[in-house]
Amino acid sequence: MSKLEDKPVSGFPSRTLKRSPTSPRTLFGIVMTGLTFLCAVLAIVPLVAVLGYVIVQGISQLNTNAFTELPPPPLVEGGGFGNAILGTLIMVGIGALISIPFGVMAAIYLSEFSGGKIAYWIRFATNVLSGVPSIIVGVFAYVTVVLTTGTYSAWAGGFALSILMLPIVVRATEEALRLVPQEVRQAAVGLGASNFQAVSRVVLPAALPAIVTGTTLAIARAAGETAPLLFTALFTQFWPNWNNRLLEPTASLAVLVYNFATTPFKNQQEFAWAASFILVMMVLLTSIISRLATARRVY
Amino acid sequence: MASVTDNPQVIVKPRSNAERKLDLGFIWLTRIFAIAVAATLIWITIQVAIQALPAIRQYGLGFIFSTTWDPVRNEYGALPQLVGTVFSSLIALLIAVPVGLGVAIFLSEDYLPPRIQMILVFLVELLAAIPSVVYGLWGIFVLIPLLKPLGEALNANLGWLPIFSTPLRGPGLLPASIVLSIMVLPTIAALSRDALISLHSDLRQAAVGLGATRWETILKVLLPSAVSGIVGAVMLALGRALGETMAVTMLIGNSNNISPSVLAPSNTIASLLANQFAEASGLQVSALMYAALLLFILTLLVNVLAQLLVSRVQRI
Image 1: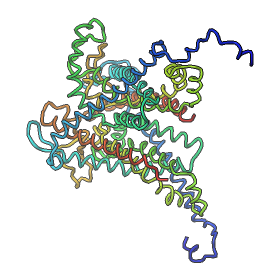
Image 2: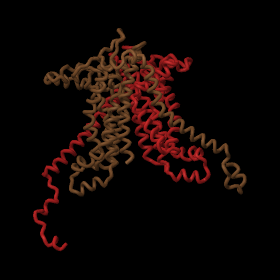
Image 3: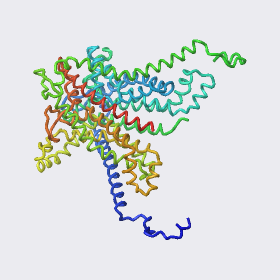
Image 4: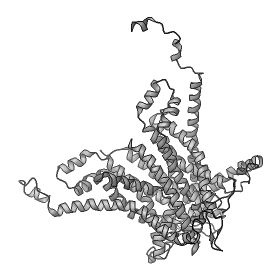
């Protein structure tokens, strides 16, 4: 030891431990940091561009008629897209009614009663299901519902949306259930609760806020889906007819945007922007609210 | 429950047979629902395959290599659409992977205070939430007019290169790919960031302790360690891009020709389905189902691979 201390550390100038602002290593770091910063800016630019355009173009076209009147024919002023809003609500409602009970039950199994191989593969399949292109889900709904009932309908559209919502609901619910601490379950079981009682009276209520925000997000996503509705619900210029028990082509906001964006008529293009504005606002608000809600934990 | 309060002396009551059966039934019910979710995937495959069967019998594997799509003569081949699907996705990845990785690195390092970082992460994720039909609308009225002068200039000056050999008349492969890259960017950024964050902090400390700078640590230690997660993220983004329908349909021009130029209109399987399905009949429906089956198998393979890579990250 003493030997080392005696010897002055030659060939190791004391200044090397300082960071030199002009060394290639430092410069490389600065350049790379600048590049990643640029990437972050590049990622935000399209968001601002799209949101800005939709908001500016959308707000100027929006008035109360938009919610109460039917889509106008080409070159006719006025009108609205009340039937498309109603149709979207009906189909998203059907989708939610199917996918929420299904998804919540499946998530309860995955988080409460399973373990091991089956759960791993079910989780795997759920993730793969969320990657299935939405147009393929549309094709599937066409085969299973449109071909069997013989007509394009709100039911077919709702069925397609339910399959797209299902993986989102399962994942959101499972995450929500996992946030409930293990002690809560142990306490419930320790008091003599059965599995059913523990889940339904203790675990589910505790996780409910997170489940609700997760499913709301799924609903917002489903409302913006277009591809699966193109040949399941189709589109119509008219109000849904209740006498047909929803067994007829149904309008939706997303398909309205698609149809009207590709027409050469100015008045219809304006409605496409207005409908986009409503869709984007829905997604934006639910995203922000769910962010704020899940930031606070129940326990 | 009632008997416990009625008779305080009975503290522990053994569960009745019915109660126990109810409980077991509940567990089985949830299990059946869970299996049903997974079975949906198989159900989709079978249904689409059955409907595609007539076209598979008629055209066989030649369907993949034929370039005609002619409903009048009932001759169908999906090569142009397959090529368009793959090309548009690859160009989108070419743009989105560097930018997405940059974002992931920027948002996984401590450049910014955590609060601002969380807001940025949220904003990037918001890109994925905007409906694709809205991107399509924006692309038609904002992006394409913006790209037109650039496309003209590329064609005028670099027209001798096959990829710029046609002028950009409006919709085309390039606008569609750019919008696709915007749509898959959040997937790459968010999942790569997850992969980078989940790395053990010992790795970074060891590298810095050996005298590496921040960027030497990132490039030589962190990125190689997170590579399976990052590749998984890119694969998942590829899966998204292959199946994306609305924005592409509105921007790609829907021309069933193969052109080497990125400025020329093209087509994808998803757009083909979106355009023709509602009006198709007879063998055309079956041919469309065949194309759908090809797309489904393609995305399924990509997704399964991606899931395997990503789930390996999450288990660490």
